[in-house]
Length: 314
View 1 (cartoon, rainbow, N blue to C red):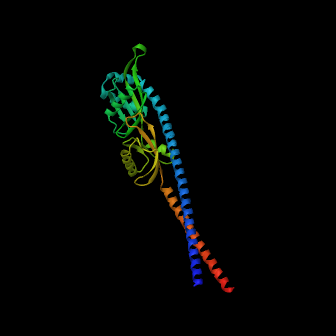
View 2: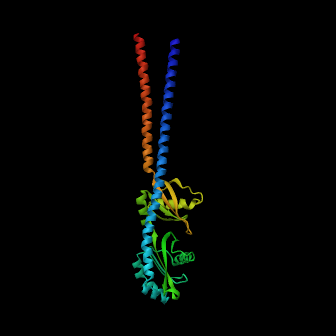
View 3: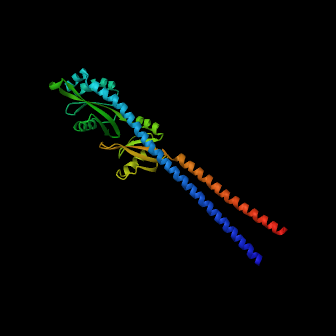
């Protein structure tokens, strides 16, 4: 009876030691995974923030490059004698037909000629869908604000526009013949340039529409829906979002707030590679933990068997 009690006590002691070892290894494994996951999250946030800043710098670089080009073109074209004589006709069809040459000369995505009162008589765009009514509305707003450069937006199309008066005469005899506006479109090509710098996905969006992005079409549509449903006032600077084809860490920054619809730049880092890495790492650490428990149990059994053999021989 005494020997049985002693054996039972030893069994309970070994079981307790085994469970304590198992709990210790599980705690260490879980703690290690939490530390690694936290480190990965911090690094991901840093990369997304850096990508956002790089994207803004890329956008500003594109903007400044086009600004120099189009500002010079606008000043040169507005001073051409034939254009001035064309504007004196005041005949919209004639001006529209003859203005194609000047549009090609400007090399712009948008070309507008208007009367001094802001009535648009010519509108050329490389991407059809920007209506004359929108051009006239934005032109009047820009003129009223005294802008020489302005953002025009309508129906998912965003333009950075430069304005120049078309005048005849000099000094006191100077009179305004009309207004010239030329601009470049912020579209998928601009988003691609930003994405190359950020090395992540890019989306340019208002509070209601995605203007341009490098996302797959399904992801772009889903992002637009999420933006429409979210409150701009409470929208977090960075978060995670699951779209149709991937899971992203996302951060945004306001590009321009002076528009009727402010434009934001979203930088999205795909998390699928990180999720795959974390899954592999979790499996590896779990296997190592289980192996340590099994190895510890086997070593304990070997010691028990060894002690039993020595006891019998003694």
